[in-house]
Image 1 (cartoon, rainbow over the protein chains, first blue to last red):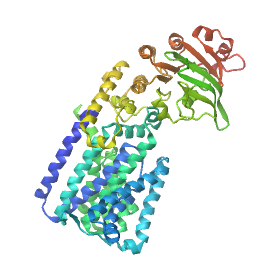
Image 2: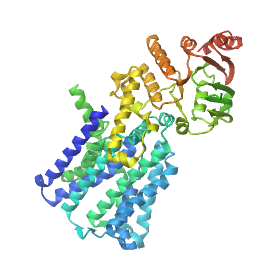
Image 3: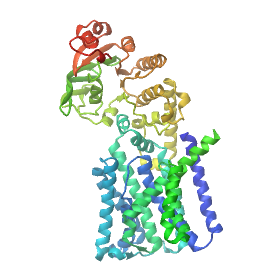
Image 4: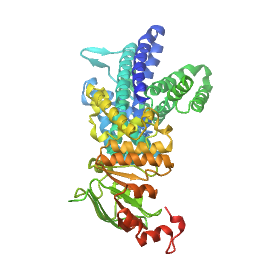
Length: 315
Length: 261
């Protein structure tokens, strides 16, 4: 099963690449490209979160904190430390990984609800820092983010960021899919199902939990920095609790333990609110109802449940 | 000759309840060693103490003469210890083959960056690991289930899957906690055959088992526990004729017949 699925995943990456190339042709216009770029950027963060939650089975309700670190790094790096934007991006991603490493050590000993609350606290802490350090971050008003310049080329405009985020998402998905079918990925999944069995088979579960936490923080920081560079602006909303919850909803709705589920989940949660604006004040009610219906009929998430049904019919 | 595994005066308590009070035993290379005793005698606790899942409050455990008391399970695994569980600990979301592949973890290269990039060396290693898993699945008669989700396997098959997974670690000492529990007579025969094959490969086996026919048939030495202490230690004939063992099993001395294994 796993081997066929493995090959399957590469086909899906190819298919996704074709969709990414065709989309600007089929749906031209800055609005569609912008929505698609937002889907890709969110999907990068959600794939990372899915490695943590869906594969290794460790919950996080604070991943917007890492997203926020990435987002503010591209603003603060140039403004405060006079770093080039690209170096600020790398520094932000590294910082996010370091924070995850330091905080992960004590809190990953916790399980289930307790880990959820601890990660929630971490997220809130980062959000409060960004919100309250007004002289540094501009507080609730946010701050300006300079343009990314690479070898004299300025990354500006919706279509530029469409292609950058599309390429990065493909690469992020490729890395995640490879990892899942490697000794590291099997260790993650083993920890999810039985920590005891994993330990007696020689898996250093402390190391692997920390590894997947750091990895997911890095994915979130990359996504955060992209959003800030795309918008040219960043506010503490990027690190808010609501955004952490959105990432979790995207991962669960699309399918825990499915890289493609992460992309589908991100697409649904970014596109639906845009599509539902015609419902005006009822928009959120309709969105909530749609989410409930999806979870009732596709309880394992959209991608895994649909695959199971399709296989059931084929068999 | 130093024993492969030596347990000296090990005691374990949970809260105020003493599960093991001063158990000593020695297991030699190549033996099939059984630990038996009525329910609640401390057999699984002894297994957990040896495999590092619970820390003894006193006593000493050594492997090949080297003290390992209090080492975490993954370190003990690297010293050649592997085990199965009485209440199954299956990776039920992974396929049967993947379960066994996890058993190869210690012997695999652990370069995360190489794994993410799926370098040719990683893919080659994945194929080797899969091949080793397939061979072990064939050993326990589960080759037909290799690509099925482990969660879909019947109970008896999962017992054997745990044995295959533990064997994938290439242990020198394999600890089996009730490998035939819940198995019908045919499945018990299969387990028996698997254990013989493993023993022939030179792996030392320690097992906890309630099926006395199986225990008497395959064990070189039997250690009898009751209420956390040693009742007897010897070959099948000596243990069978030991008055203390008979008393514990047949419910003399105020013990309930329900304690019969």
